[in-house]
Length: 457
Image (cartoon, rainbow, N blue to C red):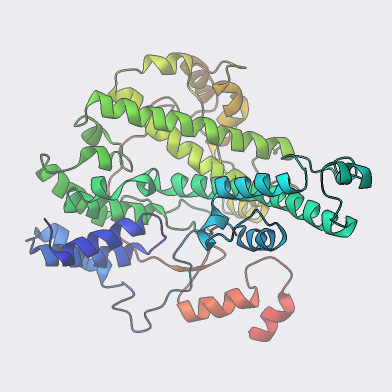
């Protein structure tokens, strides 16, 4: 049994899997965890953790970050549920948490609808309302037309709210999974079974959750020297490491080869389901406003937020799916079904920045433009075998193996640790207090707040 101090630190690390803490702060928690356990760290791990933890909020004089330490959460239906409880006699008052639970919201809508003889889904204010005679026949004669309409409108709005809530919860799930894979789904018992495993998962997840920087170069890699040092500790004690937990976030060959076929198959099935769910989200964004596929530059009407979140989630899931198929010896599946990567939409100013600095469209964009769309491939409407992907890659000078078009993503070398910058709409700012002021003034937002920005400056 771990000591109370160790257990509390494991609880904090596990909670960070669903939050957006800075890697420096997670490194500080990992340091505290090893200190509480009395663990003697090797020199490389100790030095790497110290390098990161010295920039944690606990050690900075201001102890403040201007960036949210959580992913944006959808606004629940607490207000609508409270209003329904005041208008309908059969609807009890519910705790605040019920407003975030679609099942409870739907149950309230159905129960309240029974009071005014309204079936779920009857949302046409002109055709679905009852007239005076129908209300009398339904036993609602004591309810005035105004009071009936008020209840009818509320239930219609609640159904619309429920649809938005489900969509936004789905988007949040896609966003978190796209950045941190399945870390946030790990149960505490599996996560905390081995403290070294927990430390690695928490840190690499925090690195994955980092925000993108406004740049015309590559984004910083997730796997840095701190993650590398923590992973080497796992390799040094393979019998203690919970490899099935590590595979949720870091599906390298060294991890997957230590798992049972049953665990691999279960993980593959989860990623398969997630791929199909993300493909539906991509298709929905595409149908609402088709993209400029040849350039992937944002045009008016494109839902770039939804597309980019879903694209990142697709590529993450696809990478894990390929790695698991390879380890299970089922690469023959890719001979028949080899869905391509999905690029993110690029802002026009970033595209221009690439162009004037001597760059251009990424070669992967040309490959993407010629392959069948992901949802068409998964539904079997269009074929996308490995040979087709290889032909298209060859036509555009792209290495299908190094570019992870036909194989699992190659393992990467650990990069040097760099501090997490304070960002204002993707632009790095040196000081968090300055970042807060600039964000409030609308600087870099592109929303026409020039007067406020000039006044602030």
